[in-house]
Amino acid sequence: MAKLPFLKEENGQVLLIVVLAMVIVLSIGLAVASRSIIGLRTSTEQAESQKALSAAEAGIEQLLKTSTDANLSGSLSNNTTFSTIATQISGTSFLLNGGGIISRNDGTDVWLSDYSNDPSLIYLNQWSGNLTLRWGDDSGACNNAALEVVIISGTKANPVLTKYAVDPCQDRANTNNFTYVSENQSTISGKTLYYATSIAITNGLIARIVPLYENTVIGVNGSVALPNQGSIISSSGKSGETERKVTVFRGFPKVPSEVFPYNLFTP
Image 1 (cartoon, helix red, strand yellow):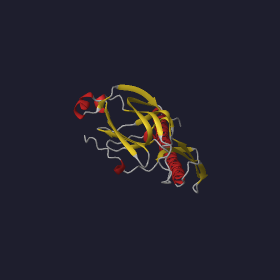
Image 2 (spheres, helix red, strand yellow):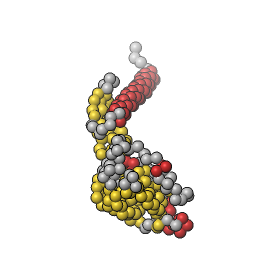
Image 3 (tube, one colour):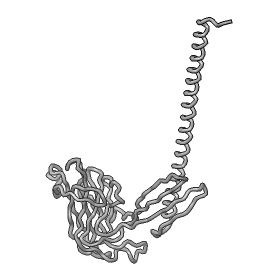
């Protein structure tokens, strides 16, 4: 018996609804599967990244346990590897504190003589030359630090202490009686610094530089090469195809503040 026309139309609509339902279910299933795959991949990448970071930190820790700057490499039990390199900071131009920000009122040291763990060897080979200190950014003179500088020169038995104070902010300099310094841009290790002051030193032993008012990055230029100031330690950790890098500064032990009666001014 022949089907009625309206039955054919109804069968066609049912088929269309079934196809649409299958498409919707398939789309939802693909979306859920895709999200699950992405989530799994993200979790795996995060785990690999954390393992690589831990390996890089392990390399730093192993090198810090040594008394030398020998480069290290190795593998760990979780199938990660590390490669650690120490680069000595010395010469005529470098950033202090490994290029890190120096907090206001917290001094950092520049060794003008050779550092040694042996008390009988410390303060040997005094440095003579012009020491230029550079600091500051382009945020405006009065938004940048002033500097207190204390130089110890002479000999260990008969040291001479000389103090300096400079400020790039004219209004502050009029009040605190620091020496005003105008803008003088230069770049050290890729960092542009906007203010500078130069100090002539004879038979220098050590210098302490103290930022006032603001935190700052400080760099130095020497007319002749300055002695070793410490080292930059860079460590790369690898887990699978993921690699992470950690960089730290290893300086020499800070000279006690009692050696530097440098409290010229309290902002």
